Amino acid sequence: MTKENETKNTLTLELLGCPSVSDAELARIEEIHEGLTSGDEAFTGWVGLPYKGESEETARLKAAAARIGSQCGVLAVVGIGGSYLGARAALEMCGAGGAAPGGAAPGGAEILFAGQNISGTYHAELIDRLKDEDFCVCVISKSGTTTEPNIAFAILKDLLIKRHGRAEAAKRVYAITDPEGGTLRAETEAEGYESFVIPPDVGGRYSVLSPVGLLPMAAAGIDVDAVLAGARRAAADDLRGLAARLAATRKALADGGKTVEIFEHYEPALFSFAEWLKQLYGESEGKEGKGLFPAALSFSTDLHSMGQFLQEGNQIFFETLLDVKAPPRDVLVPAGADPLLAGKSMNEINRAAAEGVIAAHRAAGIPIARVGVPDLSPHSFGALAYFFELTCAYTARLMGVDPFNQPGVEQYKREMKRLLTNN
Ligand code: PA5
Image 1 (tube, rainbow, N blue to C red):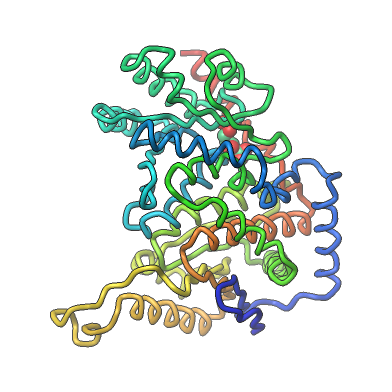
Image 2: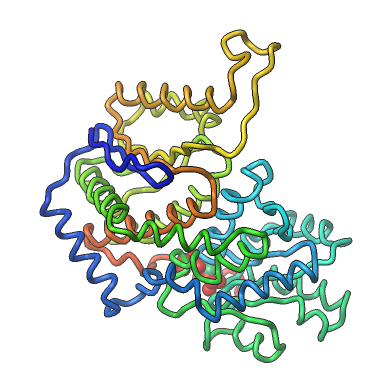
């Protein structure tokens, strides 16, 4: 076991039962990092996003968030994949402590998501929900032509226009899109929507610290300065060192036949963060027959469905535990519960579950990377997001694949278009 970085209020890393990594491998990651920060490599704009906090664009973004708050109580955020998951992850982690996923931090607009599926039922219910609400729309799409957000934006725009007329409706639309190309940029210019830019050198899955993630966060009342400060903290040498160690360990585990990485946690507020991780890692590493298959489990819930497999099933996996040290709230178990539980706090019992699982899984020989997360604050969100972005880019480069392309994503879209065209 190596145990590093015990400092309070920062990310920590413990590697339990994991293969050791060589100094040569870590030196290779230093070279990879130099490449990522050189400015010479394509799609590495995300590396500098934590430092954009003082920019004119961030100031305008905060002003837009304040205006959304004064215009309407509900903001419908339209997007999918990299234009959706990061904002949702942040809102759940930093919002109402997970009790109301997708909800607002105190003082912010209520956020509803649209365009992240093609379900008529989901969107019919959304339309019902918005019937009596004064709402705004934040549409996020680099291209503007992605099927799901394209449909949802058209629906919500129709509702706004019917209610307010075209000119007033346009004042309630906020667009985040490519600076020049794409159908959404063209519409934005034509209709006069307030707009923000998805930087051309930042891919969707690395865009959470750009306006793609920051505008919904700010509108929900999340302190985006704290998010960016957390990300800068993760860029400091000590935490970057942990990201490098985790990256080298993941590569060693993959080489040793562990082909599945299970991201797991004990806080429902991290559910969407794990979804965000699945996209980040799946799209970055899964190509040329390589990559770890990213899975996610939410404990203790999933212990009651997947616990058996983990303990005694096909050992093709290792676990990356997101271990929240100080959850924001707690409840004391009343006397009516099992005497073993009564009088204890739920966090204390949740901690016993986590430590018990680690002991049992270690006994079964399962490698565990335990990432300590101080709390569910915006600072921790920023640190965690940037930490895993770095770790992901490092491992993909070690595996010899391009972390920033996704050549395989287009194939099913072509097939789907063919079917729609023929019908
Ligand atoms: O990471 C990606 O590239 C994808 O998840 C895209 O972000 C997603 O398909 C949405 O694309 P767009 O922003 O063009 O609507």
